[in-house]
Image 1 (cartoon, rainbow, N blue to C red):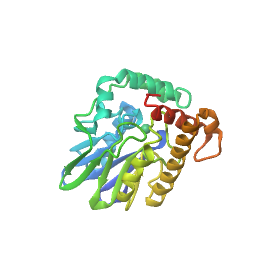
Image 2: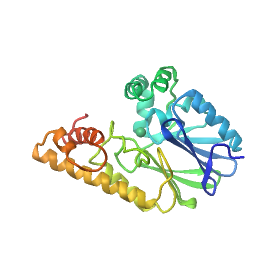
Image 3: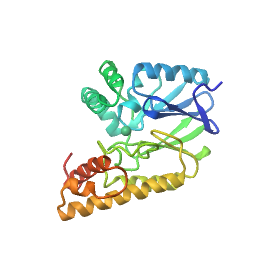
Length: 272
Ligand SMILES: [Zn+2]
């Protein structure tokens, strides 16, 4: 029995969790596994722990792809040691109240029940900070953790499973919805995707939605690059955010508006 997980490559299993359509990935080695992302709440993470047990996974480490609640608020319910980018570690350790408040604010309108449950979640900071690159031995399998630069957040971490040709990219790539720019670096983002594109030789697991492939990643890179170019051009011309966002272009107008706002701040060297 594999429960809710689908095996997308030898020993690599994905659970496409229905709430927020978020993906949890498990890489299984001999007697040890790696769990990538931990869902949004203690209740969701309890369901994850049960699904891991069904899969026969009892000893495991954890990776948080970034600090957004739907990828790491289940941490405290699970037992394994956790790896994450240095910035993700810092936010979960030093600013837990701000993370909860931000998540509640952003999702109280579209997911009121989920948002209402977030203030009671106990956060758990990762144990191991990764700045650029780390190699893990996952029960005899080599797994690489790589920070490809700023993109969806300042601390995105990508997980490579070379022996299976699998790449797990968090929200640097989004399927089924536009990329989320709320805390993004839209000018740098295409470079981060260009860095990981050569590793996209097989299944690519995005943070949300269906498992994709190299062609999908390349197409999203093209859209991100075009948007970054428009942001640079608008900023150089002194064009208002709304004017640049309202021109036809990749993604929807609301997404472009957030991206242009964030990109202008990035180019001006200030936090949005
Ligand atoms: Zn995210």
